[in-house]
Amino acid sequence: MILCSEGFRQFFQAIQTDSEDMMELFEKIRHAFPYIAEEAAIGKAELTLQAPVSVYEPKGVNNGVVLYENGQGYGESFLEKIFHTGEKGTATIRIWPEEGHCWSEEEREAVSFLAENLFMICGRCRVMGLMKRVLVTDALTGAASTSGMGRFAKEKISKGTFSGYHIAFSNIRNFRYINQKTGAKQGDLILIRYADRIKKFLKPDELLVRLGGDNFVIFVRKERMESLLELTNGMEVTSETDGEILYFKLESKMGCYSIKPGDTLTDALNRATSALNYARRVTNENVVWFEPFMLENENRDKRVQFEFPKAIREREFVVYYQPKVSLENNQLCGSEALVRWVRDGKLVPPLEFIPALEKGGNICQLDFYVFEAVCQDLKRWITEGIEPVKVSVNFSKLHLKDDHFAEKIVAILEKYQVDSSFLEVELTESASYEDYERLEKFISHMKNSGVAVSIDDFGTGYSSLSLLKDLKVDMIKLDKSFLDSLAKKNRADEIVIKNIVHMVNELDMKLIAEGVETRLQADFLRNVQCSMAQGYLFDRPMPVEEFEERLKNGRIYL
Image (cartoon, rainbow, N blue to C red; front, side, top):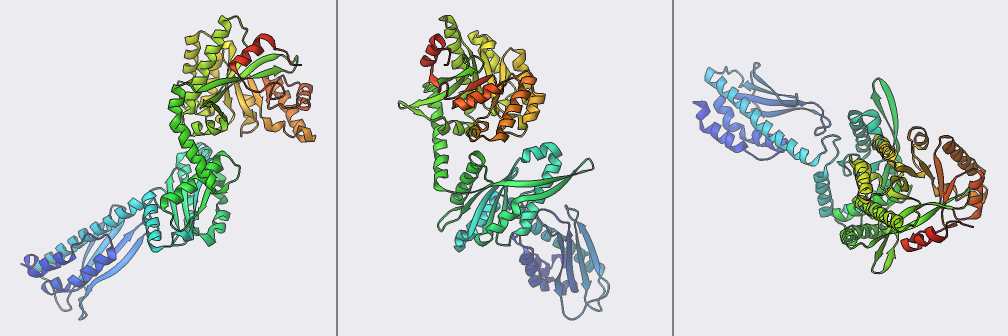
């Protein structure tokens, strides 16, 4: 019986392999085919594989390979087996008898059995190859995954060529807005098109990696970096939503690093990440190259986050108060609570810990710590017969992700039995851009509870006019940047400030200008009917004891 013959046994034994390389398997089959060809009277065998385009096979598959040909001729008729693959592809195996030979029924069954097993063995090999690609490929964009990045770096380091590359860590600016505008499905399509444009630009020895979301890492030859930056600076892509063609100009924040001899992948990635973080938090530049101080800042941030639990437990954070002054009568009319960190007897500047805590998420705990301290001070002042003024307390935009944010504020007010009219919650304007609905809901809850709400840094975000029009806040804080050029007699800035004040007043809100440092600024604001000011011209932030003296004895500024 042919199926039990020594030739069949030797053939299948010879082609068993764990390889995921189809070419390697085909070569094994070619070498082993003579074991079976004579016993089954086979003159020729070939396999044709067709598969559609996918992220794992960007060009699709359309290969035909001859597995065996005896060189002495084969018949015209053939046995054909067509198999369907999981990704809607096909594998076709054709086997011809020797020239002049007509297969017996037993031989035909043996050949059919051979074709079916060849398909299974080749299919297993191909699946293993695809699995290998899955491990190193991002399923959405076809870019490399983190595993693929690791393999790339390992290969380049072993060859000593890793230092021939720049690494760029890229994040698409305002991509969350694009997702909101087009929907997640169209957002994914935009990511795919973005990745395709970069992959098309890159050479075979360069690499695009997707880390997730709209975060990409690019390894490019140093001499081609300038061309890459030109490509990614304002890349135009289109999307269709409900029949409407939308055009997007994608700009990326990029942290770049020139890889040095001896650098590991971790070294390169950490430095590019530090540069990107600096680009996103400190500068308006889209492309920032790594400098050593950036990594030092990252390490400092990590230290701050590590030391924070102990610091807050031991109450190293203290509240300072900066007075707010009415420009109508120069009287103290409010204050802003500002947090300071007293570590080892020294004050730590806010810029050294606030951004770090914002980044690590600890800022939310600190905000409520300050709010509770303010409520305690208000309660004590009232008990001691000191007339308070309204105190504004800053809250990070991260709080808006908490569905119980408003309830937590009200609960603290009730805990200390402080009248809500003495408190104001201050939020940064940038919060509204990403979390508008949550912000609107929060403001409504606060107003119903009698707590005033102010928007900080007005004029620095995307939605200033929408804030004035749609959000019923109590106070608008004009960003300091508007006042800086008044000394230069910049008429354009004067017109802008004047009209902002006019709009706020018309909408029955109040406006306070922060960062007032000169009488020139104060006089200008007074003339355009700005109601309140805050800044070094009047008072710097002060410890609670000094502010209490101001409440008792110095409510008028001359």
